[in-house]
Length: 344
Image 1 (cartoon, rainbow, N blue to C red):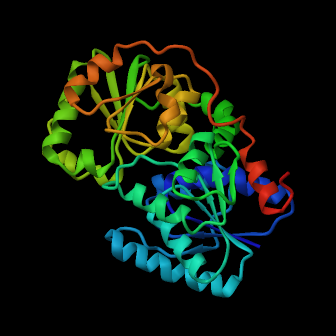
Image 2 (cartoon, rainbow, N blue to C red; image 1 turned 120 degrees about the horizontal axis):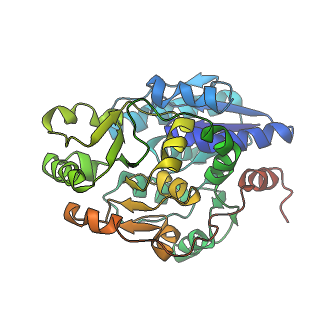
């Protein structure tokens, strides 16, 4: 029995191919939803599109501070482990849900299986960096998307239990890409556009910085399409939007992939969308000082921008040769083989 703990939009996407592979292999799985993301557009619609049953357990721990949220999740996962008695707890990424489940399982001596292990931004001001580092150090199975991730673990003295399996988000991208292409663009979105997403505290909690970033969007000649993350919605009331910016509600997985594949470029501070842009062969500009997905920086398919004034120049640069990154789309099968003890 595997207890899978998820709670945020990217984790729903990552879990879809792995849950499918476990079912195909005859493995028993119970899915616990921490409730970290809870709006329909950020939660249930993903299960509908990805053809996954909605989780049997939901802790409804969203909308709280980091400490309160993590504490509530920790207790809820601990209770679930006590009731279900799983053989392992499977977790994804670097959210508060990830860390809470890892701590609960480790303290109850249940093996922790971490998907996306070994990623490092080396920026400890990011909550995600704290979560991923602590999680890796209590994990028994470390499923890495690349050799660079394994090398990061070795630098921290973690050598046992690390496997290069590839990226499960590539599995999902390949599974649903054809269906996404069939989707129409949202109303009012022109054929020539850039896709823009921001949500990280370093960009949106500082009103002056967010204003500078948004203001810079007017230098782009084409429409800029901006699906609004819930944590940004209220802040927008304090900002004057350029006329070429088209706001959208949060997008489902398939709709987001459709937008990404049709965009001239992506402007983002997301982690997962940097990879999705790469697989879609859409140039990306990341508004951050660093990225944990360092391989995407090769050949300028992804460029880091710190100062908003550098945004337009970065968008005008052409990327070089494209090459496959993060596996072959069969990461989920490899994860299942490891969990079943069939890795060789």
